[in-house]
Length: 361
Image (cartoon, rainbow, N blue to C red):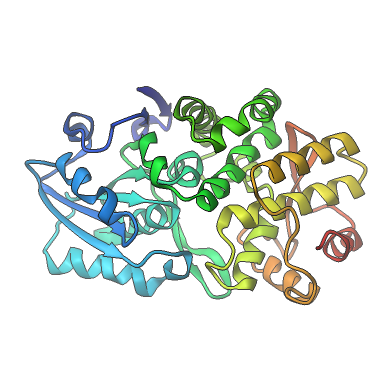
């Protein structure tokens, strides 16, 4: 088992990475404040891992709520099912919520924990690659709104993150690829050696070599933990994690939540950001082609929906509603080279329009 730390003073917490961690009572007991535990999961994960997860909380008063699976259910209506259980079962503010599932479950459970009785503890047990390397770490929680992704939420850090790599054995190929988009992102924004390592080891991850995958998870989490410790609430450098996300979130919302997986939107959105970076004279042709190649090897889309599916007007309107907009300016993460990213709202508007026109199917 590997252990990392997210250093946030008295709110610091560990990330445990290894095999057969799910259902280990010795791992979770130090992080449970009182007897009441609510496990939040979904219809896909519950049949696979809910019983095992409950074994880890033997001796506690454990309840569970099973939500429908899918990004389209990441909303306030579904979130109320969690509150219904908490209030109906008379949970108090000493309780612990447990997020057992992918990014949707993690974000919703964290937001429920932030809001219930003005804040209770929660534990992240992510079961998808995307949630293991990204959404379970850093305390971003929330739900979607029809007009924008993750527009309703809060920063609320977990007590710990438990990553059992064996849960990836039941992950389908499309979800595994979606998670790789976030893994590749870490190399692109600030870790060139990791990008090179991914070029060499990507096939092993796709083939589900758990040792290689565990190293990819560890290096991704280490990158995220380092920056979160410096910029918890995204007032500066943490915004680099949003490479491709402003474009990608518009794809997700515009095509209807669930039609494109988050990682698929991030992949296509990242290539839009890189195309615009190249138009601005930053990233060179070699780095651009290497980026295309690694996303395609990961079986991810490199083009957004075509103009008929997502007209420029709709695209720009959705991007303008993004959380990262400041004073009416759409701020983007762009690349100078692989491993060197920057955030800016200072770019020629016509280059954004040109990107939307040209980098399409």
